[in-house]
Image (cartoon, rainbow, N blue to C red):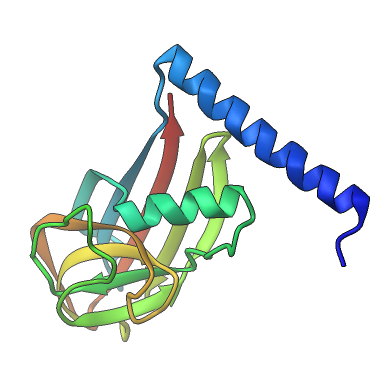
Length: 175
């Protein structure tokens, strides 16, 4: 049974959401959500960076929906994993899962380096995610389903037991 207080809070939340949407429309501003990843292949022994790539992309439609639902606390979906894949297929706005063979999805450490940025970070050890990595994604599951964002690397990363892979992936909201 919903109490009068709960009903009032629900109605106020809906009114505030509508008012905020109206305000944004009047202002003509639309929030942009972007992804930016730094991928570094590091020699295990020397700790020298063998390959480094910095790349930006937009969040897929499903990811944008999840972010909206998370803000509204409406069946939240937690982007918990960074997933590596051998897929070089271009990212499409309607993608919902990581393409091709998932090499490894690993639970990411999350932080907030700026007020508008959520950072996901993971290090794949010398025994993890070995193979040819062509894309990196953020997803709710280690198998790449419930994907928020994915980017295709401009140069494939060939990882083997002589290296570690550091992935730092930022999701940023701007106006």
